[in-house]
Length: 341
Image (cartoon, rainbow, N blue to C red; front, side):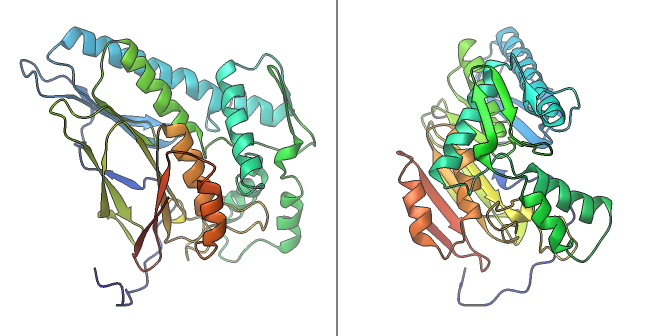
């Protein structure tokens, strides 16, 4: 691509869940299927979790019953974790916490993921903040539910922003408490990676060792059976149906964050990635992908790096260097690709 050529202005796209990776190894199949009598052919599955498209490629060596059992166990694990983290389910643990401001006896997976989120909040000086949900609610209700084209009044933004602050999230054992009425949490910046990692563990426990698991963020477990790498294409933020860059991945996870995945207003000025310091959102047509040892780490780091402006290279590098074994691939509004490590 000739990056010196200025591209046409991207056209805003309607609201939708982020889907920033083109999985070159995954075919678009409805449901799942096992290919009989074909030792080299994988099981391929496609579905939804946490409001995002999900997929699985599992090499099973022709052992159909074991592959079927592993898939059933994996989908049961997805449902179990959604019961904890989902904002779409009114009876999830996270939804209960947001309503009441307090929960006791929270499941260990919820407290573990919340610790991960709070650790990233500390490392990023609050750029990543799981308590940003009041700002998300304001923008969603204003643009999507209210149909407004102009931004919400500044006093409303400031009122929502006053409810945001990760230091007001108190975790003591299995008890989680929010410091002020009206606070709310979202774990969407890290939960999909966490679910991917847990599903990878389930499949490994069934004896499988070659797989590509994507429950919102993909993780390549080992290599393909022939020893070759998994190929993961990174979407062009200006045209997400096209891959702009391809990664060869062995036993690593890749997560991508970018504002264009969910635009809240028709003009594309407001996106789902909200900087809690400013109350503003990440640019629509930029993305950051992170390659990391696991999907939880990649997910949290890509979300955070996407919220740090691309011109603030020192801040991006400083955060990235707190995460050994990680590298980032940044795509700017012109389609230029750069790598940080």
